[in-house]
Each structure stands twice: as C-alpha cells, then as structure tokens.
Length: 507
Ligand SMILES: Cc1cc2nc3c(=O)[nH]c(=O)nc-3n(C[C@H](O)[C@H](O)[C@H](O)COP(=O)(O)OP(=O)(O)OC[C@H]3O[C@@H](n4cnc5c(N)ncnc54)[C@H](O)[C@@H]3O)c2cc1C
Image 1 (tube, rainbow, N blue to C red):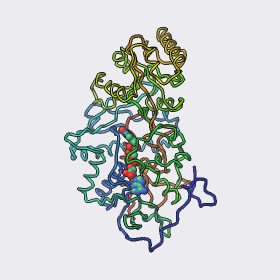
Image 2 (cartoon, helix red, strand yellow; image 1 turned 180 degrees about the horizontal axis):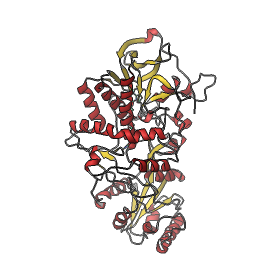
Image 3 (cartoon, rainbow, N blue to C red; image 1 turned 90 degrees about the vertical axis):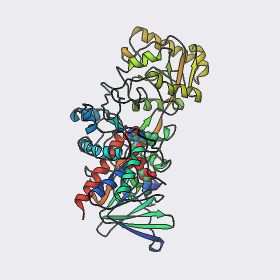
Image 4 (cartoon, protein in one colour; image 1 turned 180 degrees about the vertical axis):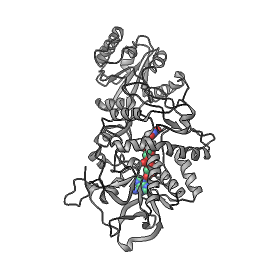
C-alpha cells in the first residue's frame, strides 16, 4: 500500500501531495457543519441522516447530477424481508462471506454491515416509497454450497413514470425536502487540516475559481471508486484494466478522488486487496451454465459457478472472451439447471421473489444479442463453428468431447456436477458471446466501524470519514455476491453510520 509522498520519493503521481491553493485564488468561502463529498448512494444517505440527527451538511458533487446505477440493494435482513418470511442467520452468512473472500477482510467491519444494515434499509424503504417506488425482493441466487448466495437483494421498480437512478433520486428528493444544500459540477480537490491536525474543511473547484469550505464537524468522503483512474488501477487493481469496458456512470467521475485526498491527509488504504466488481455482460446478458469455449476452441473451466467467478475466468481467455454454447432444448436445460445453480447472468436478475423464471422472456436478451451480432445461431454445430471466431477444428473436438462427458455423466475434465451435464444434441445451436466488464473497484480507505478514516497505525484521523466504494475492508480477492447488491447495501449502511458518528461526536 502506498503513502503520500513528494515528487522525490513518489512511485505514483497520485501519492504526491498537491500544494494548497493560495489565499487569493479562493473566490468563495462556504460554512457548514459537515461536508459530504459525492452525491451517490453513500453521500446522499449520510447527508439525509445527518440532517435528521440535527447536523447541517453541504453536499458537493463533481458531476451535473446525483448518481446511482444498477438494480439490487442487498442487506441480509430487513422489515420487507420479514414480510416474505425471510430472516437470514447472520452467523451462517458471515461464515459463507468469509469463505468466499478467503478471509481477506476485516471481520469487525463485516459484522458491522451484517448487524447494522437492517436499520439502514428500514430507514431507506419509506424514503423510496415516498418517491413513488415499490420496493420488492429479488429472486436470483446461487442456491447451494459451495457458492451459496442468500436472499436479501431489494429492488425498487417505479410505480409511475419515474426515470433515472431510482434510489439515488428518492434520496435526493428527500434531501431537497429536508433543505439540504447540494451543489453540482463542484469537484472537491483537497482537504484542509487545522493546527491540531483535524480535518476541518476542503477546497473545491467552483465555476469561478477555488471555493473554500469550512466544515465544523468534519468531512465525509463518498466519492466512489478508483475504476476510472488508470494509474490507480495499475497500482491497486491491475485486473481492472483487463476488463473489456467500464460500465460506470457518470463516466469518468470515479477517479479515486476521495482515496487520494484521504491519502494526502495521512489515511492508509485498507490492507485488503482492491477487488473488482465485474460481470460477464460485455456482449450478451445471459451466460447460463452450458459449455463455454474460448477463441482457441477449448473448454477452460467448470461453468457451474457464481457470476464473479465466471467473469474472472473469462477475462483470462485469449482476447478476453468465450462463447456459451446452447442447443435447441436450452429452455428445459436452463430451467432444470436452476435447481442446482443460478445467480445473475444464469438466473434472471429482475425476478420478483417467489416467481418462476420465464425462459421465453429471459431468452429475449439472447435474441437481442443475435441482432447485435453478439450471439450466433445455426442449424448444425458445423455451421455454427463457421460463424464463430474460434479455431474450428479444436472447437468441434471440444464439442464432441464435452458431449461424451455428458453421456458418461462425469466431468473428468473440470468436475462439473453430473446434474448439470446436459448433452448438446439437437439444433438449432447458439453461441452466446461472453466478456467481462468492470462495474466498480470495491477497495479503498482503511476505516473503523464508525467510518473514521484510519492512518497506518489504525488510529482515526480526526474529522475525516469515508463511506461506500471509497473504503475497503469487507471484500477479499473479489466482490462477494453472498448477498446480491451488497455494495449498495454497504454504501447505504456506511453513510447511515457515518452520520450517526458525526452527530454523536459533534465537537
Ligand atoms: C453499471 C453498474 C451497475 C451496478 N449495479 C449494482 C447493483 O445492482 N448492486 C450493487 O450493490 N452495486 C452495483 N454497482 C456498484 C454500485 O453502483 C456502487 O458500488 C455504489 O453505488 C457505490 O456507492 P458510493 O456512494 O460509494 O459511490 P458512487 O455511487 O460511485 O458515488 C460517488 C459520487 O461521487 C462523485 N465524485 C467523485 N469524485 C468527486 C469529487 N472529487 N468531488 C465531488 N464529487 C465527487 C461521483 O461523481 C459520484 O456521483 C453497479 C455499478 C455499475 C457501474
């Protein structure tokens, strides 16, 4: 992990502490009790909760609007889940989380998420309903060991014709009602410390010059992740640069600004690696769990795996892609396979809890990919091979060998469970192209369970807080999907807790 440095000893440019603006460069000074940097889920949650707890905050956002993305908001328990009769056993969830992250995590932080997120979600639910959303639970999990995922992903389909990032919008509307000031197009550049070393404000870039913000009780960094900063990715998360594209919006705003500012103020990055959230969704949406072949025409993995694991293997293939091969009876095969596996890009990420997947609807994404050239279809496997960008002879060999394994009912090559060894016999055949995209990098600033940013000795930096993707600590070598949507769950919960801490420690 890197420390702040000057030009003489910096390995990376982001380590170099910039000079503070000169007094005459400051064109405006703003006063607030707490400065929240970033109007994403973490920042907006913190700001709204702060106001409810009696602390006036100012939210500064780099882009022209609040931001949000995706559809799942995961927590292990909530009052909505209780209505469906679902109460997860936190000890079991924690053990599974630890297994999936190789224990490369801070278990105290994990338990903070597991035990505090219900309160945060129960706080959020009425805020979303007030903005016309109809929260519900998602039915899309990998149901059994070893990759078991638990119910807990909430989604917020709009009741009316609301557009945009629904949950962030609801929080922003709530913030407006509460009278919280948000300024857009105002990137925060650098923190200010007072003589005691306490973080007491920041400099931001306004339309007309530098703005100085004095923040009586401190600053919350909620600037998202580092995925849009190539150099930071090279330093902390080089695999991010191997993905085919970034899906982040507002594009280019996730440049690790909060990470950098924290570093310059003496914070350490969490000891854990900087894992990637990535999904194999670059070309087509559905992967299922049939035969996967790479450009060389070779099979390379047990296709029976959760979404992140699939993305990791696919990313390592020549040119970062493979094909999922389906036969004419894909519908029966996929439906049957969901007894044994699932999760996003295998099951349906939009399915409401208790509903059964409608394969015809699900397959529309493949039909769309066919039109876009990201999936191919032919009556015979030889014709399909001619269309695919693969080594044809190797592919036909692989195809025949895979069918033999299926006939034998034993995958001696990669150990796929016999229940999932569906022979690919009848046409038409499909080749659905798969490639991994980066969503976010979920590592960052070292924090404690109250969201104080920590220095390298794990001591809080007075006045400095970090939340959401600006922080590290609960993910190991990769983003854990033990509860789908938990990155949103984390941003929400960390924002909620940071507000409580600031309100409790007001000084
Ligand atoms: C396409 C896509 C889909 C996703 N789907 C899901 C999902 O379904 N479930 C899930 O859990 N996660 C999902 N994620 C990840 C999820 O969006 C993030 O983990 C989460 O939103 C992080 O919230 P945050 O508040 O920490 O940061 P962000 O939501 O990234 O917000 C950070 C904000 O800070 C602003 N900012 C940055 N620098 C500055 C600065 N210097 N000054 C002021 N403002 C600044 C940014 O513009 C941004 O608005 C998805 C990600 C992508 C890209």
